[in-house]
Length: 387
Picture 1 (tube, rainbow, N blue to C red):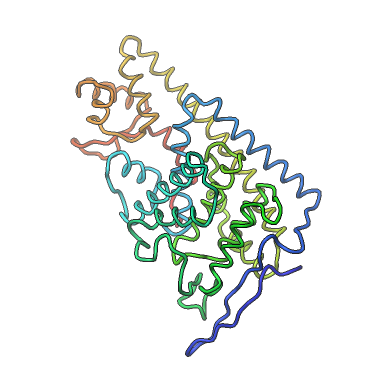
Picture 2: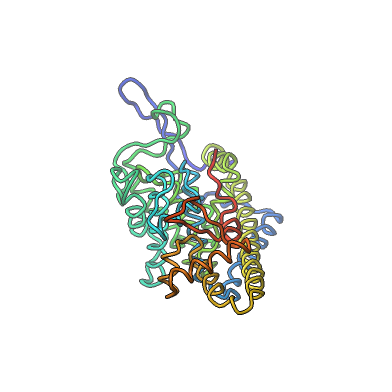
């Protein structure tokens, strides 16, 4: 099996180590796809198509996109070790409240900002997925909190490593800093279909491995490498909206994920990685489609419950609609947004609590926070912190 790069012996005072320098893309010889691989590509593309088509059926596509972006942010950050939950992020964004580690929640919030910036640049500015865009996004990922001292937006100028306490005992050592520029320049050419066009799913799979192997920044490489997949799928029209949270698959299969990356580097096993990646796209797209349909059914069932309240249903229905957009909120927030009196908002919320639709989360008598619990449970599936 042809290798995907070669090791460089790096002499240093006291201890030499081996750094891995990947070969330029595309892989040579070309990756050989068997008939079952082609079938998997077709299945992944069909699942993506069904997920993409779902946005035309949703009553509020922006609402789903808002939460799906945040779900991907939570999942991708958890792979890097954060312990923030879905409710932690929404509490922070909607109410300015910090539950758990402030550093963790800031890291997740930065990810949302990075993805939002990248998608805006691609769509509004017609900007290509490029090294410049990756540096811009990286600057946002590390703009505040952990990693902010590690050259946000700049390719590294020193050696980094993965695992271990130093390059000499690391699990993997990326190329030395002086090779990062040429490696990333080649990756950019590949992203722009030079020397030849690559089908988008294959391109996204290969580009992710190459980016992770180069590890061009001092910190944030894992998050940006996973975000690169979403950017490519949206930039090339495989998805109109960022509804694919592939980090759920990587999180659920994280040991195999790391092993597959390493087998490409050590053994040149591109085919094994492609099968793993394509299966992840198929599985995750199907899960996302099913989740969206379950949410729609939940909204409809809860609305029918509220309708049975008869004349009292008016303000309760309005509050239910607000909870779909802001599933964690306070009474003052609801009263202001709906232009209701505080007693009216209180009464409407009590009815939702009695129906099992909303739940008070603080246990306090004042400054209470309510959650659209059945909805949040569906949204948060898979985002439980890694233990």
